Image 1 (tube, rainbow, N blue to C red):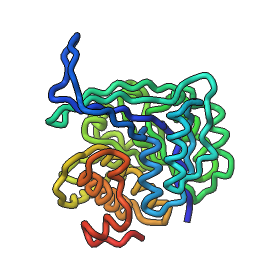
Image 2: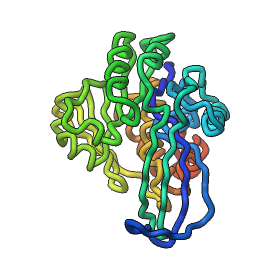
Image 3: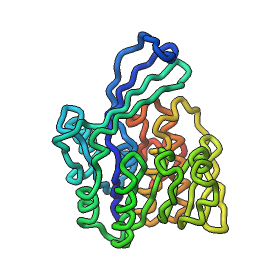
Image 4: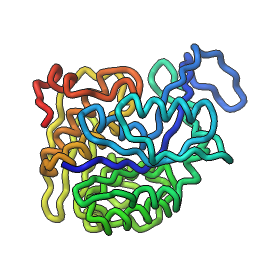
Length: 293
């Protein structure tokens, strides 16, 4: 049984709900400000931890109140944060999110300390990494760090999952060779479509309420969705990735892992908010009668 090691972004989400999104130059009044821990890396780490994975988070926060709160939140979910550096020269990453009554949003991200992830974090990744571990990354940290981490993980014999989001960071670049690439339909199209499977060992394209498809070279396996009454899809993708990593670290097959990922993503969509929606084994049993391995 291996660990899940996540190298990625750690942000604080500042969320305001409004009646309608402002146009250029407009000022609108909104609801109260919500301060919610986020960042794709941190969300995926929490998603894996809540299912029972032994998770280690590697990333960077600022020496500020947000940074302290973000690290404390990860620890509350049982995540090893010894690999999270405190940057003395930059602030913690922040996402400014405005959401209207219909669920449409505008998001501006100030990467802050996430943009400094580099050699120090790669060294921390190498330290103690074992062949049974599963390394998870996204694209909210610098691409050179992602590429170096892939090499370091493969040198150690660990499996690598890359969630190529936001995909714009890799547009026009060669997709790195990883064990599993996870993208949604839009990201897959931007990066080259199902031909991506020729660059990686395996590819998963998530299709929202329609489930997902697992591609392994010349084989495509549709994964049927779990039916739920969705209220908020925020972080459903992060729940999916974290659950897949958890399952692979436990020795599950790719098909089994992707099925669990689909269930976790569907469960996340039944609750409002990002971090609060990430499911536990009890949630999956209650919703789908599913026993987590």
